[in-house]
Length: 471
Image (cartoon, rainbow, N blue to C red; front, side, top):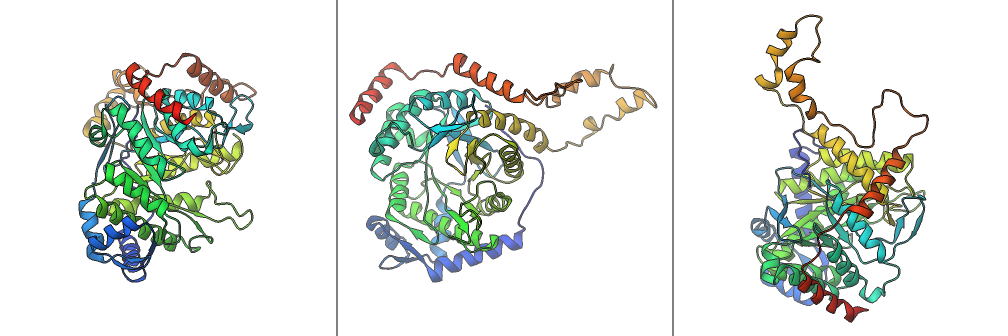
């Protein structure tokens, strides 16, 4: 598994802008307040020092500062076998993830969408396991042929059986969250072991503007109690659920996320939480929340700088599109987003290969994006300037009018250049593009040849016994 590193300075905001957004966020938290529901969460917030009037909760600056002081600034995530997989901090490592399930799947042979079914999970997991730049999958519980009441549990179990890297998951209800954590604990060897070496992390959202319903607060509560890392990520649409101003949307989202920080620390001091933010636009022509808008991805990059201001890990979004199929629009949007996020301060990036503004996942786009991430990682390494890399002795040795083909320096360094798998640089190109043929052949090879390590037979038997209860 590859780790993309950044050595290029890139900023959307500056220190003055960040501090202004922080101050206005604190004004919302301290003086205006948030709508919060969930009795036990509200009880914890009262004890922690928040001002509570019914469901209106205000968060004094001292309380927010206290929470920011105890929340972990670094999170280590593991794979299913308990090996260190990702270290998330402000050192600028970045990791990418796709989905193990979705509402629809784009058939890679026909480039058309159909309903996502349970058997597709195994294929998505195989592809994600095989690709070097995919570090995690998101299990969301959306299989068309699974009872909606147990979709979260069934899709998680199927992902667990077929994926060996880190699993990000969300649940369709409160009750299934603890059940999924309990299932993961069987693999880890217990709840304590799972908290010490988490190979799962949860995803949940507040409801913009400024609302934390019981479904959200309970998920934060359960995650914090179990010390399972949790992403708290407002999805706001400028002009719909946020003001039509990037600065205002960033401020509103930031306040909501900081409220989540306080909630987790009020429940269990030291519990890990990951800062996530999705401030997109409400398209007034189509009424969709866009996944490919440039304003969205500029806002994500800006939000990653806010997370960095608090020294918190950041969960972002890239590699997705509003287009229905793999076409010029989807490829252009995916490339733009990946470039933006690789230059930003984001750490965990989800939704790679997600199309149709988050209605489908496209295996072929995941494979293409894997190549794009490789390509952009070569860019983000920056330029090392030292006496060695300046190679003055080589330049002077070749002299005027010479060439470097026979130089040992060339032989030693030519492999540092990025060479594509699909984006060929042939001397004579074919009349018709064969990129998608190569991508499809790669998927065929993965599905027929790649082997995901199996779970321990005793653990698998215990999990399948639980699975039978849901079927």
